[in-house]
Length: 248
Ligand SMILES: NC(=O)c1ccc[n+]([C@@H]2O[C@H](COP(=O)([O-])OP(=O)(O)OC[C@H]3O[C@@H](n4cnc5c(N)ncnc54)[C@H](OP(=O)(O)O)[C@@H]3O)[C@@H](O)[C@H]2O)c1
Image 1: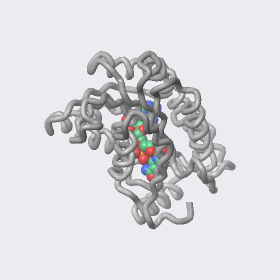
Image 2: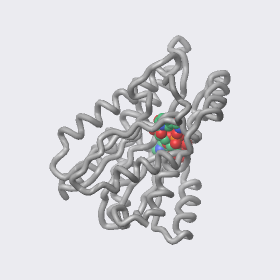
Image 3: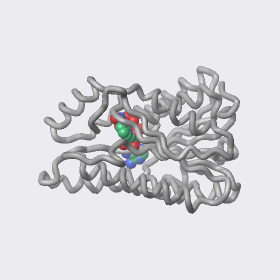
Image 4: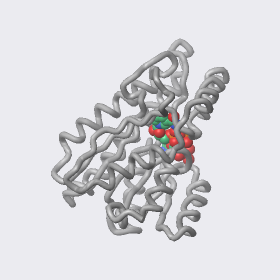
């Protein structure tokens, strides 16, 4: 338990695996009331049941971040179940890496829809709630790809550069009492490489992830650090890499 996190209502997008799942489990263990959203409802149900059987509080609902209505309903689940929303973690993301001249245009669209529009929908759904209360926190999960670009990660990095810009702009525009945090993970254990459709790139990514990864808990602890600060402390950016990740 952490008295600075206890009883905060924290909604997490993309909570069905990887970093989002770790954030949900870690914050719930610190005493937060967590609301889990993603498309794979069976996974959310199992994670919420685990949290509840460990004595924590969790709700879950199906969520497609590409749809504003779905995101608004997700925020409403937090308000209906726990009476308030303190933190929205915009975590859902996809990373189907490919070379531009493979023209996987549908995958470019998917990255824009989930990684950028998903975060915008989170802002549209939660900012009015936070502004009404003059209190609240966004935690946007980007990537070290929000400041680095290399072959195959061009569109993915572009989406994360965009979210970094959005996050800093949101920080400046958001009303009093609203905090805005960006957490940029390096290579982290998760299911992210599964979204790569090119078998060669997928194998390379999985091999890289196996050789150089943080546990998703390391990112969850960074989120907990930002959330647990006193209300007048706005942790704006945390970049968390495995110590062995030097070149990107
Ligand atoms: N792992 C890394 O090395 C790494 C590094 C830097 C940044 N990140 C970022 O960390 C975040 C989490 O990724 P992860 O690594 O934990 O990968 P992951 O295990 O694949 O998790 C991605 C999550 O996003 C959800 N998601 C995908 N599309 C969605 C949609 N349309 N609506 C709602 N949820 C959706 C997935 O749930 P459903 O499929 O159930 O919907 C899943 O819960 C992403 O933003 C990613 O870019 C990861």
